Length: 133
Length: 133
DNA sequence: GATAAAAGATACCACAATAGTATCATTTTG
DNA sequence: CAAAATGATACTATTGTGGTATCTTTTATC
Ligand code: FES
Ligand code: FES
Image (cartoon, rainbow over all chains, first blue to last red; front, side, top):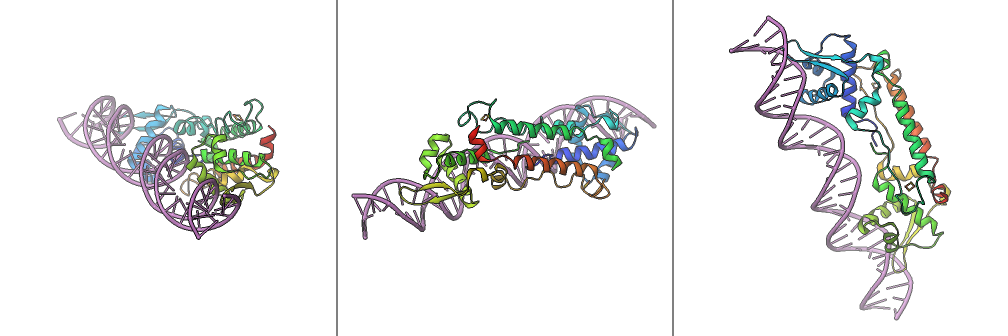
């Protein structure tokens, strides 16, 4: 059971690096060296980060990436969602067969509570906090 | 992101059914009918449950399965572990590159705390409780 | 003892998600 | 125009999960 995939991991690391440079435009070769992630893979990840609005990109010579948001406004749960979709731990365990209905089911209630907790905790962690550590 | 896989789900359902029968030996055909899970798949799941000590099996005519533990002593987190391995949300996010060491890393600390919470909450739910619901 | 009904063991196939690669098009600076 | 960058997109590889098939072993019963 993995909470965060490799995509997310690398995405966070790339974001952290770019943010750390405080507005300087960072290009792929630099990131490849710093993060030791295969270049084509990293490129795909960066494109995703751009599309999801975490960073802005600049084409052409001297181009690269810059943050689109302040560091303390980038929550890693959002990055996770960008790469892994919504965080839903389990739709309906035991389906409708053994369980009268979902409103009463103690299992579902608890799974839901766990999920809320995970999302909420993950939603408290920002890139800024990460860089401080 | 899935907290519990189908294996686990079916495993729990099978366990719940077997436990509900209070010591009566339950065979596969009955379980197939009750749970509507394909027979060979269910058999594999049951074998796993036997190996992991949740149920006992009886071969031969009139054979089948009986619980090996009291209902309030079967925790669904254990079933999950049996099918999905240990619950580890993420080993070491950001690896050793951006982060000085794991003892200081605020992200890792938080991920670990989330993981502990998930395991602990999942570890409170028993089959007995499920059957009450 | 033969038969049939059960589970055990094991090997295999299918599908989906993740991980990773490759190629070509577009933009921009000089 | 040439070079250096990202955008778009399509493809392959690996892995984990889901699911099937087949054969062996045990045991109750006739
Ligand atoms: S079965 Fe769907 S909620 Fe309990
Ligand atoms: S990087 Fe390994 S713990 Fe923060």
